[in-house]
Image (cartoon, rainbow, N blue to C red):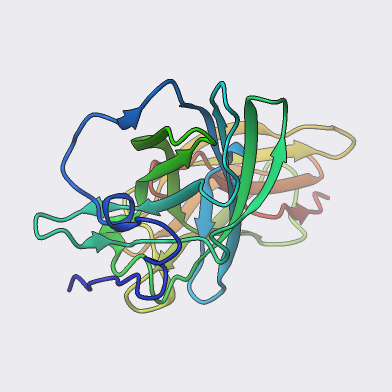
Length: 262
């Protein structure tokens, strides 16, 4: 179900209607020579969201104008999908619309805003995992303004978990080891972790005394996200599974499981 997100109480700060309510693809709206030159979301990193914990992150907006930037009038919002009826699917707004502004020069200012995304509120369902859009607005001291409809993109991903278990332990040299595990990720509908099916996962081994893991083979998860394969026990060391990630789910590696070879 799509839910309407309202902005009551914020409209008085400045004209938020055009900024907050997403529209279809359109050109930037601006007057004069003001420009938004840079927008950085979450320090340039993907936003990884679990099942219950609220994720706090920042959006930093840098704008420039020959008259200087009017602080308190720069503002970003983030959402997943603009809907035909004008509602926003997964709209996220700053806690404080004033932000924290630092003047880089007479003409250029960077304003940083703190936002929170709640897995029980904002994603609304699992289809919103992936790319989200940031719209940013800025105003200048001489009255110039700009709204960039697609000022930045960021991935909001379903948090992932990966386990591993190699058995039997201990094991005789050159005997067969069975390595099991499971790849799961956050489900934003049930608010639990569920299996990630049909995904390629690397089985890796780090020999005792070595500094890095080496990939032995690639194994695919089954319909429930579980993993199972066999390999030879050649030396003491650690086995682990490692997942490279997808657009909707971050990379993750299991903690190594030590095997004693006798």
